[in-house]
Image 1 (cartoon, rainbow, N blue to C red):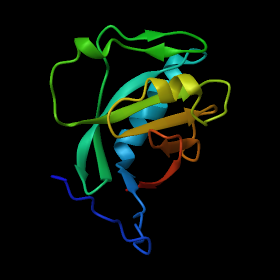
Image 2: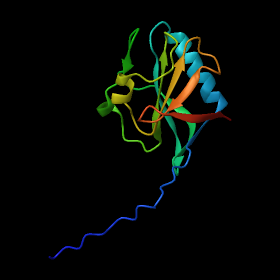
Image 3: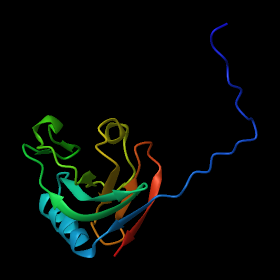
Image 4: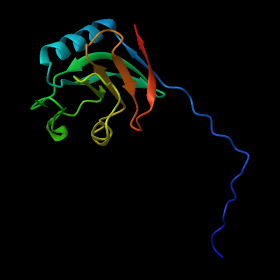
Length: 141
């Protein structure tokens, strides 16, 4: 035959490194204020920052153009965004209080990270998630 089949080593272990998201305190305060203003509707914002080796530093926010906010949903047309390599994800609120990502949240995942803020929108009510719905460590700096 012309092709050689490589055999994989069964004892090879792939180690998964733990990701970390760092969120600046002033950005957190802006997120919480925006969520309180939009309540009882969901709020949505785009996260700006930097990513290195899976770790993300969030240092800014963008109000998405043509965003819609309703009681049980929020969103924006992704194709209307200008190209910007500083976008690292989105943050949105869950006015009902449960900060876990829904199937809709996971299906509409944007970029690297999703933050969800649960009611009553306090410092301890914000959580980070990856595109598979796994919790990611969030540190306020």
